[in-house]
Image (cartoon, rainbow, N blue to C red; front, top):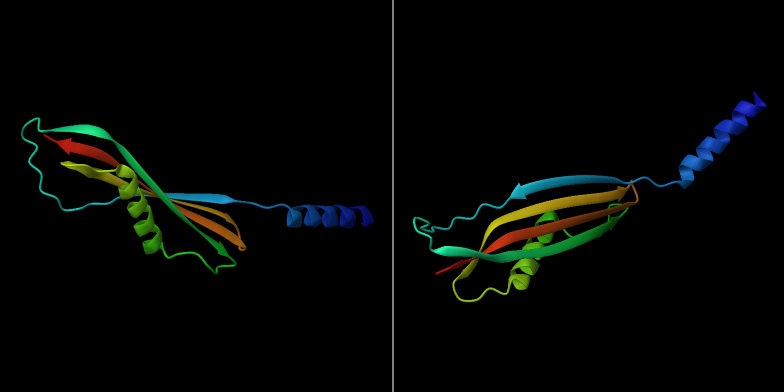
Length: 120
């Protein structure tokens, strides 16, 4: 019995000192209303744009809201795109990732990516 209790105490101590993390991913497509006529070959793909924003929560306190993360990621993506003339962003995709050591630490990252298209 004494050996069993010492094994249980060792397992409990080991589990309390180790951390665990989980990752949850969600991908959503941002649909914007833009009217573009693509009947002819009047555009070419120029490149990709990328932006990222993250927030950290300690014991559920701190960080940004999901909407603020979204806006910051899209803002950085637009700034990194360096659009000129008749260029625009299409196929914008949002990617949310959460890393956590529950219940103490949670880091949420929002990534935005889009294709840069130039019209002739």
